[in-house]
Image 1 (cartoon, rainbow, N blue to C red):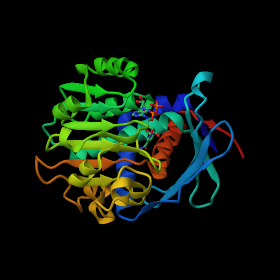
Image 2 (cartoon, rainbow, N blue to C red):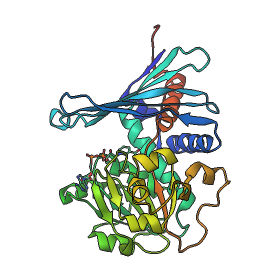
Image 3 (cartoon, rainbow, N blue to C red):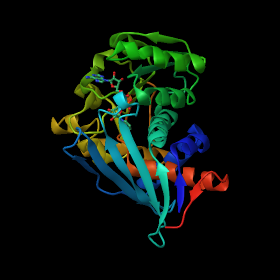
Image 4 (spheres, rainbow, N blue to C red):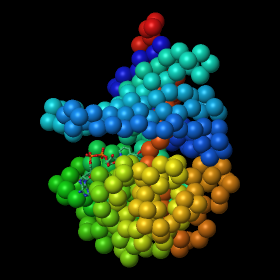
Length: 321
Ligand code: NAD
């Protein structure tokens, strides 16, 4: 069995590895070759922690396993990030544990890959301005991955806690993009692509603020009750997601579904666009919206890449169980 540390994951899994692995598993999900198991998420009644499991099996990539972890809100004051997770991979032929892989960096890189994939397949080719709603731990990863998908000329950003924006601004500077902190109305008026990655529980972006032709990657809503987008915006957009069942229950479309504004059949898995069984964007004026809810198979896909490359490069610890 292999053990792959957080540090090794950072060394061996880059953004393009994550993009390729996540794109392949989204395609496998849409063609029925891969499926996610029901998610377990529990408030454990200790230090306000949420803990759970996300698992699945990819018959095409032969990846079987589970990500275990959750959210410990008091961690930051102890110098740890609040989201903590580990991935367990199993040999699908024997059921033996094959790898234990650190899941924290991989969660960020696979989540950024997800929105980047949506931009690659759905944003207008001539998109020039990237709008960032959110500036927390994930936002920097999102910005770096998105910036590689189009010839962006500028980043406009808004955050609920404005003091967090300079950190995101530094990342934009590192990748050579001018950065401007703006109000949300201006962000909507300027941005061709908008990424939202916050823990908001109410609409942050309104339909009237968003230009025709915008692509939105809504990445923050991954739990019942969370919300980032106005219901009218959801109803007006052409909707895509990683997994329809998650989108309608814990993702960004949950509220529009509950209000009867849209139907499950209005939402297309992004894998269908990747597989070319759905045409994706059909006009330059269409608003496309990708609801990235985060599925276990994404975690397994990148963990499997980490285990393979770490083993090849002699960077994995090998132990007998
Ligand atoms: P973080 O704690 O580092 O940052 C939180 C962000 O939300 C900050 O930008 C903060 O200013 C903002 N925020 C907090 N309260 C807010 C409010 N009331 N209104 C608007 N914004 C508010 O968290 P993070 O690790 O960057 O994660 C951000 C979000 O992304 C979380 O909701 C997390 O659960 C979610 N997430 C989703 C996936 C996925 O696959 N879709 C993966 C990882 C994280």
